[in-house]
Length: 160
Image (cartoon, rainbow, N blue to C red; front, top):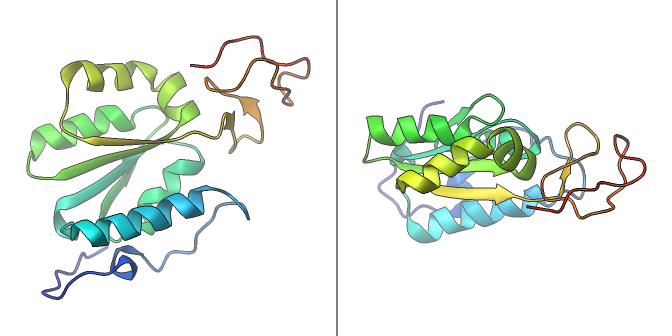
């Protein structure tokens, strides 16, 4: 994707792509992407200096819907890739987009190190308390007793 630089004031629609949004009807992720497009317009964030990095899961499609730079990485590694991106180009505005399963389970160790190192990036956690893409495994933020296809008697872990 080519990011076009415009001398005019950017609007929310300028941060939207032509990609078909592929979330389930009624999913809260629609509201998050719309809010981010509005926020980027309010901030007049330069699209050529903004990058969204995601892992795996429902939230991971987010970079496809933002007219900025983006990178869809492997499961749990968005924070690690974002750290490398920021170190390689400190002038970029780096955003990590991750779901509760991706960031707090498989990617938990990488999230911990981003926090420990105080990496200058933004982290948005989409928390739906379930692994939505796999159709219902409980996640690190699921409440005790959450019944899913993989835990028909209810989860026994306390939420993170």
